[in-house]
Image (cartoon, rainbow, N blue to C red; front, side, top):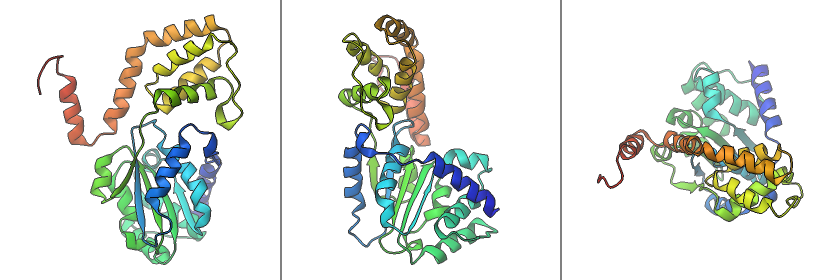
Length: 294
């Protein structure tokens, strides 16, 4: 069992290569805002939520924050993509408890129940200054199993929760919330160029091959509605095409013809990130005709 957890952690560490936040569009501002909310000088235990729709960059932001701040903590752990991994393990919360304890303590932990796991976390980490990131949380039970109470962790600990669900943060009593918004037009265009013209990943940005690509880049960016994951997808799609304006023109025309599908995907992402009552309101409003009153 310990070997399985160790392999899982090793796999995640491999995926979690350090990110140079200075080269990611908008990341510097995110780091400044989050550092202010975390107030590392305080000896209190601070729980912070990073909230936003799917594909908006919550995980990337959390990774940058972890890379920047975790070296200041002897006890640290980043549990990535809890929503998806939970499905792979039949929603067994003990898996995450074991992963967390094994990662921080490098010890063989046996848990016979989630309740026992919670007690073990409090017992083992209650006097340690911990930096913990719970990424991609979509169930209150996940938070309760790993970090239900502040007194489970020692003074000065920092707990970060990334989620699409603001209702979940409210239920868990998370008062400090950082909302991640879509990129503005200027930053969206900058990100697109960084990726499309071989500059992605933090390398030096090459200029577009010719002036004709500026307007084509603007057109491509508008299709993404400021959503970083969509910007990346469109930029990589076009980067794989021959560097000729007419080829991009043809590809963009095809993308624009499927604009309804793109918009529906973004609406779906937004919808899935809403609490259940808000989903019902969303569907109700979507069924109204122009000019109808609520």
